[in-house]
Length: 304
Length: 201
Image (tube, rainbow over all chains, first blue to last red):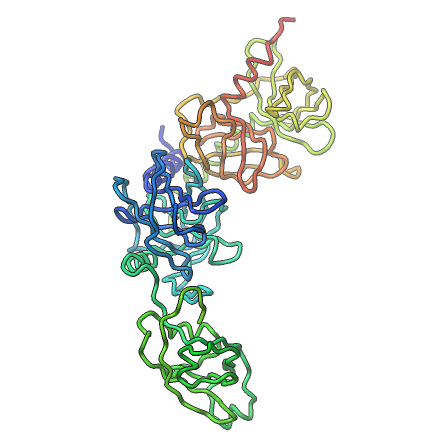
């Protein structure tokens, strides 16, 4: 007699078995290995934070063999990395891009922190629109999970009840909370990593801090709000320095949009912005001043 | 909205838990109660066995409370601190429902499992999870632990971890973070056979 409960159990085990064929262990740090997914033929997706070396990376396949892999590129801002695997015939998982996960949907996180596959189950606890990581990368949608995470699960897939991959799990994008990088973001980042090795991002070379503009000044300058960004650091010779921004300038607008949070600047600094001037309005010495600033390409590991 | 699957699931889960509760006992010595599994001791003069964890017991005597509230005095007849297993013997006053060990098929990763225990004095609590890891064949020998993604708490120790058909897959023994570690039912079976030979009286 086949019951609902038994069918559920069998279907979950089937889903794990089918998706698990594309989940590998990544040996690229001192501690226990982390996980990765054979996303496209010959391409493994993993998390950046679990790859602490660029050379001597090996991958343990589902059949237990360990083979070398080469790092094709990494992006700290989305915590994704792409590895290339030569001469292996591993299946790729089916990736669910058409229907976004729903809050309450039953999901399984897979990992391979060693030769054995591991699984934990739970539900999607939050789904939201696009968001930015602390390093400014745009993630297509916010996916938070109510499930237990285990060592080495980062880089593993989140799968649905049919074994389709919804995204890549990481513990590094939100403190203490598992987050899934959605499949669409992974697709986009992996494509760019394979082409260029890094994710191109524009940058200005400034550090800012939120400040409140005195009411009288805000009124005098006819500002829309009273929050703005004080430039507290300026990279010598960087794009902003070169184009005449000064320490102590209070940044009000970029491209006509009010900036009141450092993330507002990041939002204007996509990869396509490199070399294309932005119009910035600042308060300098009590007066409004408009400048043209041309973002440069952000060197590795630098914020805004 | 009608939800026949969810309704069926709820009904079946309740029935499965009900049956598992009948094979689960409370084991009391000093301190908080642990759990135990009713075990068929095959022909030992009408006495019955309870399997629990060695760490649940203080001393050689325990008080067993069955799911229907019947209380019995039990004697420790075997104990293995290393495997964290113990067997208790008692004289049942009625017919009992014993645990049925799942010999086959082998456990699958992701399979649903149910744990029963008495966390914080909450008698017969159930929690649901999945098999977290299955040892690969080449990792020599029988697996030492069943690892399940099931949220346990103190009070589940010694109780059953069962599959969706109610067959015993392990005896819940400890937590490792949010992971449950259970002694595999086959290992319990072998241990009972080794360490407890019923003596005709």
